[in-house]
Length: 462
Image (tube, rainbow, N blue to C red; front, side, top):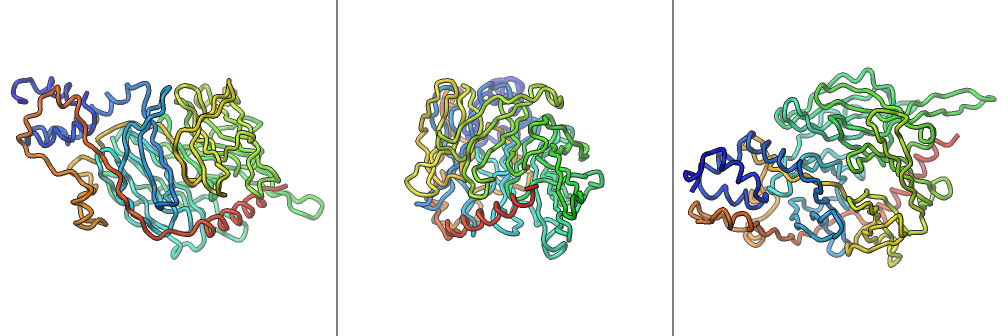
């Protein structure tokens, strides 16, 4: 069939197909399979996808029964309907759920670091059902002793490559040691390598750190700390900043925050991207945050990137709405919240809040309150390249043969005979897997969260 069209026309037709249909096209003939797995085709498909003004939302929620992480894509505009269910290759570990570091150009970076020192980091493309487990980092507990660390995930447009950056702050007698030890993992290189971070003078927040990727930079909330002697006692002074990492040249810099955010407890702030703009979520907690009760959340947006005076407080969500987490702002202007259902201590619901009408609408997703994640998702074919090193779900990594035969679709032969019209309207069916396993008990996690937050909040009290 491909001989009926010039190659450039075939490419233009193929890039307009849904990702599942493109995967089916790989079974049509060797020529199409070779074409679709080239870096040039994958990049062309990505640029076509980036023109979509209303990308879907990547949603994760975690349920207790069964104990499982559920992933899906949801329509982002007025309606909120499941666009596609995403089966996960991740089997239960000692953690309740993974930390989602971030999502860039169709790839999701996850880390198994929510509880204790672990070194499992993964890059995952849920649409092509392939993932890449990163090797163990060079900087570990056995090497530097107790430490805190943060991760960042971004895309290098110059080398057309994805990178994970890991900053490790060893714990000294006077707190976290600065500068941190920094290492970078590039997908094409597939090794961790240390880079110079001598100019990093600020420290990222512990335990509850967040990051986002925008305009070629990874962003974290950080702070400069000075200790003053006042009447025979020490007083800690802090100044909050945004620490940036240039993914292409691998250099660090800082960005100023507005005065209203520069001197608050940095543990109350989370960095994000809202409608294409750099944003800060600023929480206010009752009782100085020791009991974790949220009073409100301010959403600050930087209207002009890199300009301090362009920061503006766009929203303020009050705790009377019963929320625990602000997850983002939808394309229709409604705010996504994780709201406690009051049925159990930790059971939550994903809801959408209209700031104008003050209405709260349930979206039909329930699970562990702290585990909800929502972010814009760009569909892509990355990790489908032959030399990516990624593993397909069908490979016998952690799934036995019986599970594979029950949960996976059979491969189609090269003689599918599908017309282009059929390819436009057909997509692969993706089913949830029913994996369950042993995970850390909720009460253990809650105890850890309470002790950790109390300890960290005390650090910044003046």
